[in-house]
Length: 604
Image 1 (tube, one colour):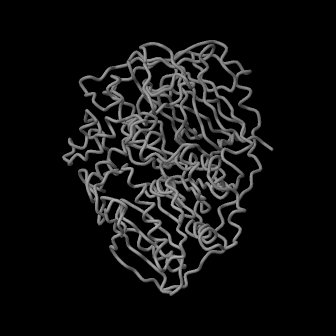
Image 2 (cartoon, helix red, strand yellow; image 1 turned 45 degrees about the vertical axis):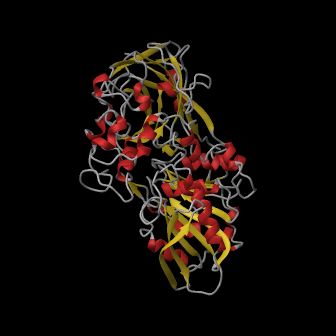
Image 3 (cartoon, one colour; image 1 turned 90 degrees about the vertical axis):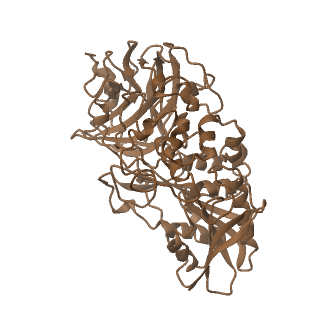
């Protein structure tokens, strides 16, 4: 058993009180009131530049006045959000709800990442601006895929687009969906099945992509390229493209990309970004905030807003997976967006641009903070080092997290067998349901566990997180996964966030970070450096009496599809019979200081 000196643990006991940040929730203030009767038109067909006609439903205030327009483009059937459309129209906006190309009543062939979705957005914006009922000023709203359609449209710079409000918008395809730093995500496979036709398809029983039941055996079917076919669905050509054409440099993925400096430098619109700490598409919002702040083409574009609540893939819920974050977790989000559009589309001087640029909900005290930037300017990037006596396996192991580098070089090892993957804590592979308890998934020896002693003072962590692992595998390829846990005094191990990287997707020329443009060589049993950027940040106070814990594994199934350790997984062609059992070793101390980097907010 490893013995640790008091000097190694002492930094953990230094008082790090909660910083005196501004307690402030997003305030809708005064915004347009409902004062109009609403008129509605169904299935109006708008020609795109290639002649394909896109179906739109139109909602307008019953008034002879010209009004600004709000546009939303969705693949989920534009009749769904009727009440929201009426809400906006009653407040003096024309609303255009459009079906995406190839879905429901719109013509054309459906492909989720067809580059023509970008120009379709441009054409719909400019069509709306030309209508006799329009002032010529257009804003966009929508969540999830509807966040993508906003950013895709903004990247084409339609002159009449004046503001966007993307909720839970995913980033580009290799950051989150379908690949999360090189690893296929289970929920996107079900999404692909549900979206394989013009309307929603079902998988077995239950909701149309079946997230309510465990898909353990379903997602074990290999090769992955045949997954839709094995489910009895007509395989859409684009699904095979996702699996086989898996580098961001291909024309398919480059055509629909919207992030990065070269895209942000073209975009002219201010953006109101909304996401949650447990949103499966979380990285899109902070990444878009950062890119526009630095490179946006106009002063308005360079002043984006970011709101992060204690939510999953949605907004305005106070309870996630049994945790009640209190009534302040819910605020008048529609009202805040209306205040935003009142300013940018109607020209109302309502002070919205004087609000804090960032609002974050801090879990623990369960309150909103208004801050000046993201990450917080006062952040102290603090390293916590992995350490063990060689037996960090499972909850019963000797793994430690210490604020001081270990004096002695060491390592811990485990066996990763793709036939027996580590189970994800939520029990299925839908969007993360909240701060789920990870204890059951950390009972096996195939998981390394490192944790601090019990904290004697509160530790406030707000911001993005990354881990640096020095690790070796006996296989030609494998995955590395790290999870951040808040361990409560009663033992509950609350999953806050995690990071993953595929070994062959690391960049050997950039500190081992994920590289979406090439695949690196992995020599068995050679130590490589991996920098794992967690795909969700967090805003959490680790209270006195709690512990800070991380788990390291090579699978977390079925949330992530398994790496069969063959190298063929990179194109989804490996089969179960080809799976390779791998010996994994994580190094710490000396030449190999594996560590976690936390955004600690100190006492002011």
